[in-house]
Length: 112
Length: 110
Image (tube, one colour):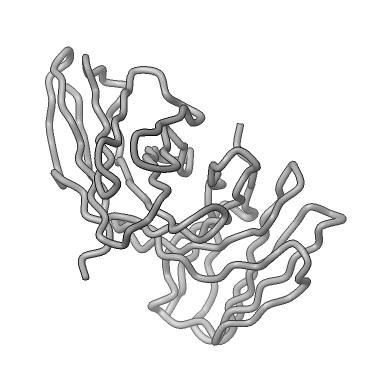
């Protein structure tokens, strides 16, 4: 049972490049979340989904897009990366609200 | 803005001592959750306390909740080196979100 898997684990981008982060969960969870973690800022919610085909904005959605075409996958896209998006990105899933969340191991993204 | 705020930001104690960290939140909650994060890893759920509960135990963990003061505390008894980590409180908000605080960095000294 893999739980929540994030791909890739590390990535370096040049300013202006685009990329997609993949989150996959095998627990049949309805809710999925994308967070970013920066030093001294804790975790901030970027976007989330309450079920297949749904997405919603979190606390810091600007510069990111998401899609949930399949229940098990939640994709986070950066269309034009900026140095301010250098961060560690975490995906989480939850069976339902307001249950506990299960986290992936994170993606460390550096934008130069 | 963040719903929960942990206090202190950092805490260093001797192995074997108890560690207490606090969380304050702003709006009414359904439950409050505590998570641990080891360096560079994903968060792991520790304990969930519902709004109608005042205290909950899990092994060496004790969580209290005071909804009148909008605060919670996490007590780790008989600390061990393996408890060195960051601890976060999280509050599910009414619009399906789970919002985290900035965390408390706990360092257990040998």
